[in-house]
Structures are given as C-alpha cells and as structure tokens.
Length: 125
Image 1 (cartoon, one colour):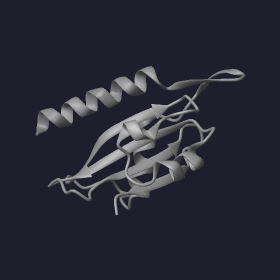
Image 2: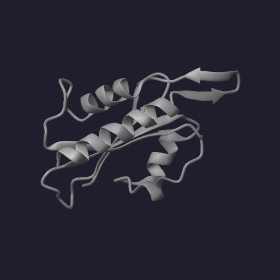
Image 3: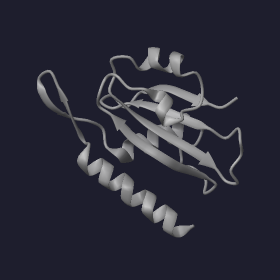
C-alpha cells in the first residue's frame, strides 16, 4: 500500500514539474501549483484540513488544451454537462477514490488552472 502512495506522489511531482506553465495568446503563463490544486480540491469535497487516509487521489491531471474528451477519463457524472462548464478553460482534474473501493465511489473536482477556483465537483450518484 505504501508503494502505491509513493508512486502516486512521484507521478504528481513529475506532472507538476512538467506542466506548471500553460501557453496563452500572450506567451507562457505560470499556472497554480499542484500542491494548491490538491488543497483546493480537498476543500471542495469537504476536507479543508486535509483528506483522511481512506480517501486517495488517483488522478491529478492538467488539461491545458481547451478541447478535451472527458469520456476517456472515466469521470463520474454527465460528460455533456461538464463539458459546457469547462469549455474554453484550462483546468486541473483531480479524481478520488475511497477505501474500501465501492461501486458508487466516483468523485472528481475540476479546478481552474490559473485562478484556483473550483469549476465543478462531480460525483457518482
């Protein structure tokens, strides 16, 4: 179990290293850090002081392109409704799972990659 957490931490660190800048119309712009993204997302799901051990981040991914197909990301909720909220935005997708794994446990938070504002929280029903 500890090795999975270490691997997840390594992957998040590498993603943060290589995706901190997004290129806009006026050139490169620095986005918010992965640490800030995780704090904001944790707060959006009800854990502003940090998530408990049974809630694990399984994806933290920056979408710097403005056109994405969320059906490939296995995001809970209605992809059409989410796409309308995300259209034209650069954002982070943070997905969680609870242990023990449940069939209805899907949870995702979308965070604006520049302002750090929560765009949407999506849950399985």
